[in-house]
Length: 336
Ligand SMILES: NC(=O)c1ccc[n+]([C@@H]2O[C@H](COP(=O)([O-])OP(=O)(O)OC[C@H]3O[C@@H](n4cnc5c(N)ncnc54)[C@H](OP(=O)(O)O)[C@@H]3O)[C@@H](O)[C@H]2O)c1
Image (cartoon, rainbow, N blue to C red):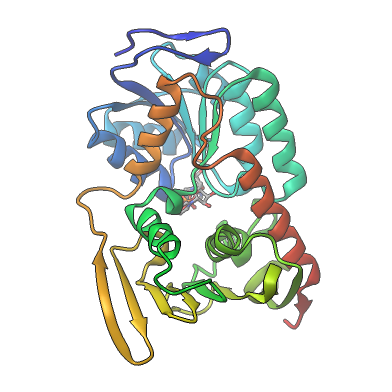
């Protein structure tokens, strides 16, 4: 229920319960509707999909209204914020449809398939002065805050080495989004974005990037490994795969030991401080309920304050990560 609504393109005032419109009908749309349904501050209200049948069945499952297009979804008076969970190639157009109607957007990662396309989206949000945030849920997790605190406290000394990987055996059906170049498929964009975001947040942009990749028959990367040297000589070693069930773990090391962010590192519930062969301490960062609610809470917090960007995950960070993904892709060889 809305107490005060948008004025002059930015949402201000106290909103008791935000009505969410959902773009897409896939796995993430399902996960987000389940998340919103368990929150007192949110209410999923409507969905849109390119397929009227999928939209109708999704809406029936969750008791939502159906909108014919992302534009008509944003125009609904009960939609205060739009969640874009379409395939990567659709993110810019779907988000712009809401932003141009003055409706705030939480957009799934990556904001766009390339930094250039994402810049267009960010320009629209800034021109319209409407809230936009990438749904990089990793950085809103309790584990993320604890990890940064442990590093700041000097538990492991200066960070010299970061390792992270994200791999799973993806559906090989070339019609699905993972391997389809028209849907901006490929492991780097889809799951490699997590290790890259992780390393860049801790070490900054690299001075040197080396990468190797193996491509699918469709031309997108099936797996990719990158090694990067950052300012001061710190290294990051990152991997992503659509072929291998990898550990999905991260490790941050310095002279005083290492912090092991237990799998799945992007929404971990446990961090270990280890020194040589010994476990020094374990930090339980577990929580009850959906791990997506932290990013939703950040959206609500920003909207209540009339912010058009999240200070915790600004759009320049999303653009910086995408520029680095472009760079890694550009330097990677093609061994497939
Ligand atoms: N934050 C996270 O943890 C996380 C996890 C997974 C994915 N994501 C992101 O969320 C976005 C959507 O990913 P997803 O995993 O939800 O993908 P998905 O399940 O493949 O769904 C994506 C879109 O594909 C269409 N679709 C769904 N089922 C289909 C089917 N059986 N046949 C043909 N098309 C179908 C739907 O589009 P229409 O309704 O328009 O037809 C749906 O919105 C991606 O950008 C991804 O990067 C984020």
